[in-house]
Image (cartoon, rainbow, N blue to C red):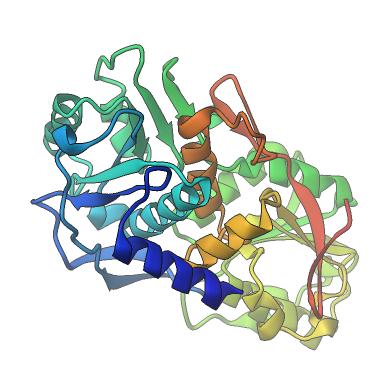
Amino acid sequence: MKQIVLILISIFLFFGCTQKQQVIEIKKDEQDIAKTQIPKTDKAGEESFSQEVINEVKAIKDEDLDDGVFKLAIIYPSKIVGKYANNTVNTITGYLLFKNEKFKIETFDTIDETPTSIEEKIKEIETKNYSKIIALFTETGYDKMTSFSFDSKTKVYFPLLNKDNLFLTKENFIYGGISYKRQIELLQTMSNNKNVMYFQNNYLGNKLKTIYENSVPSIEIIKEVSGSNNDYKALVDNEKLEEASIMLNTSIIKTSILLSQIRGFQKQPSVILSTQLNYNPLLISLTQAEDRINFIIANSIDKTDEKLEDILDSFDSEIVYDWVNYSSLIGVNLLFNNNKDELIKTKIEENKVYYEPKLYNATEYGFQKIK
């Protein structure tokens, strides 16, 4: 099925557009860097650096466009979120092909999140009359975005940012970042209040640690798992782990090792919990069934149309397990038609994507919803 879809899409793009079907090619900003060293998260959930390539294609001038073309600007700092930018473009392209409508996507690379670089690209976006924007900034870049006075008709969607984590918000800004706070609160309903937490000293690990500390009133043990050369005996050989509720705010590889070591040292916790961070099928292949007994994971990604998933998969856009891709899908669906067809189940309330987390067991065959 996926091969057939890919062939059909390739034929469609090659032979052009009918009156009903037209794809406007994506313009790559002239100052974009073809290859640049950027941070990303690999399939194992570890932070790393790699060379990302965002392909250049010919631009179609606005005067050559028909009326009714959906125009979307994507602005991003390639040195910070290069991987996410590629995935977002793929997700949006697949979605618009699925919708079978005319569109134009143009990318604007600020390279970094300095005020000067962001201001330059925002002015260019405004000059080209884009009123729908997807902005892949972290909180650093967002602070600069709040200083601009956008036209009231302009809508800006932030896939990476959760509204609850920001001090300043705007009426024409929509926030698509996942709520780890809601996930942790739901996971804590499974806790017996004998709380133990492991975390990693990186951006996301420290963020989850802070949320956990602010959400859980009583924590018996907090232990840091370093990037390498861990003494796992010292980490898990502790009597306080017996009948404890363990929260793993660690990457998939570290989580897999901790699960095996907890069993290896014959500790029997009441439950082991984790957020979206470990909602990934790779976890199944890295652990044994015995390691995953009483292991519960929170997930906020909802199901979508199967044909849409097939098309996105042909663009190498994973939306079943990748929440950033899913957030980007919610964003383009909102900006395209305000989800009038109710294609996406996840709701947007008060300019915030309202993710509804659910709990899952990790089984031999994947993840099974339990709540």
